Image (cartoon, rainbow, N blue to C red; front, side):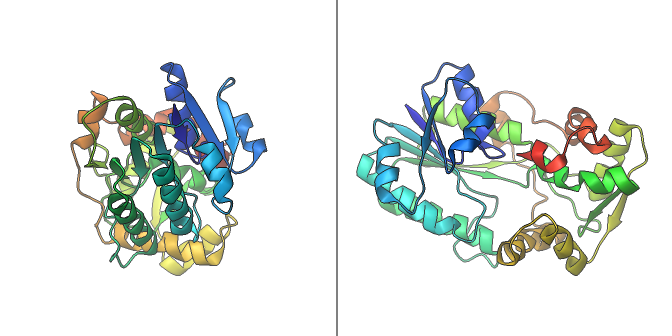
Length: 293
């Protein structure tokens, strides 16, 4: 059986659905029972939190493989460390960690540093592992749908930088391939789209998909931080998120990798296709942050 942590989150619910659709026995771990409503009917649900080691041990009982998806919190590494210790006690056969591009314990960016620390802890544990390092998810832009709806503006601190965004659905498909297949032990895969558009090119794709003019407007990081805080994000984690966008804005995440098509057996979803699939969100027919989840 496969355990998926963060099972009701942006990527976790896609992983759970794909595993269930493939007939794979899956146990979905959530922090609150109410979140189970986001998951397919019939999937086994377990409520567990890293603050309770006994609950983690129970969640891992009978599990062979796990998809480790950390919570979006400044406590991220603490959760992962406790989960990895529990996975070692359970003698898991494979831990697939959702990391991020440029993960490194010495990274100047907080979130990349936390992911790098967790990768290192898994490697030191002796557990068989695979690290998936996705670029920024296209679905992150759904949080900016209100700007598009209200003023036809996409406000990001990117200037002319390119970023090889990846669709959450593709990253989930890659995770399922690694969890279901063989030959992935000890591998590190970088997951990107097939191209690296600028923010201006993203706005053009949104214009074509929605049928209304969408303009890219570069903003200062101080203004961008206010936008992030407006989502209800606590300031320490907002600062951690901005550390990613600083690097994106300097072109750090522009490189395209061919790991993803090698895993899923098809070209990655392009930004224009993503824009068409979510055009109803950018028009206002669905809440952007809810759609991202």
